[in-house]
Image (cartoon, rainbow, N blue to C red; front, top):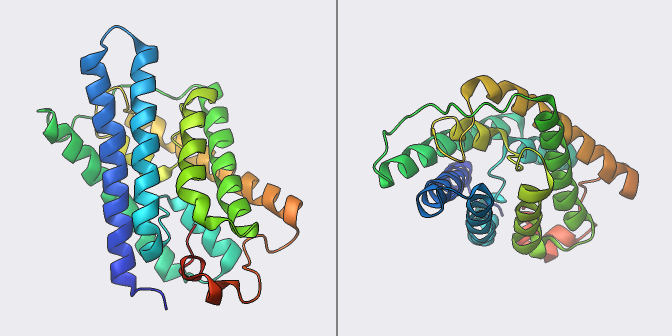
Length: 242
């Protein structure tokens, strides 16, 4: 049986908090270590994110599914119909609260103001295309893993995809509305101006829909359904992991 909702919500809060702490904290550290080399800053930031995300999925997946992402939660609800809409609301609230807390924590660790609104404008159209591509790819990877009964590979596969998408998308792959909101609270390398947040979130939702459509095209209808007996045999999948 899956853990009670409060425990799952706590896992989503802690996981998203630590994910944003990794993203923003490593961005600040990268600026301090390599102030004149943006490429090296991106390498340092993406490397820390890959390792941090992989570990967080591994340790928190058995509790909540390690979504850390409203698009993933909504896609999971749409595909599996095991989360109720009230569960979705709790997950999303925990993720957004965790993301904001993570940005504040990262700022505090590096002696910055707890809240410093980002001035990094990311409103250009080509960046929104990048976000849609990044999020579609993320949803595609996650749900293809589930359909192929390879969900245990999610820590490596999902983290690897995000690491790659840092480099092949124009937006550096936020691919997560909660993380996008959180990153607006830090005026650093990893930040995003509040005015750019709505466009990114819309692009991410569109990308999520495209990702689910691609999964349906590859595997047929009901792309997130688990094979008969698989949930009972695999406690990680039974807990709706990814």
